[in-house]
Amino acid sequence: MKAKELSKLDLKALEDKLNEFKAKYSVEYVKTKVGSKSEKAVNLRNLKKDIARVLTLIKLKKIEQAKKPAKKAEKSTEKPVEKKVVKSKGEK
Image 1 (cartoon, rainbow, N blue to C red):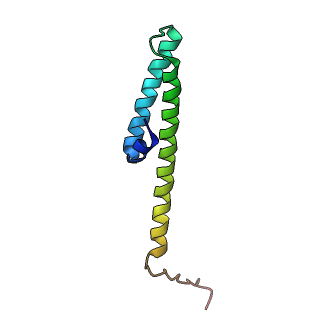
Image 2 (image 1 turned 90 degrees about the vertical axis):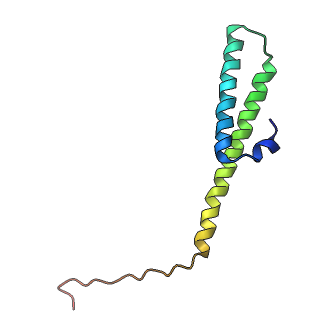
Image 3 (image 1 turned 135 degrees about the vertical axis):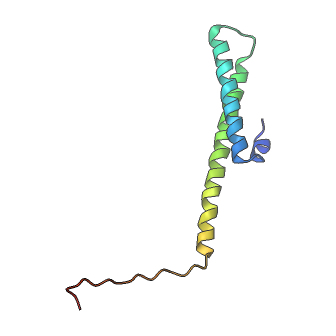
């Protein structure tokens, strides 16, 4: 799957794709270890690359989400809270 196609997906869809690719990889890996050569080793290599692409996009999307709330906090017009000084009984 191409990175352009993956970048259009949201975070939840990317996580679903990641699980899908990992499941396919494990099935293909077991097939090669058992001795079934019906699928080529190229499939394993491509699945590893797809998993890496998805992980990269997930990380980038999480970074973008972390930056967005920080910008909103700077623009907020909330008044600062004043601290009240409480004197103990011995002080006047």
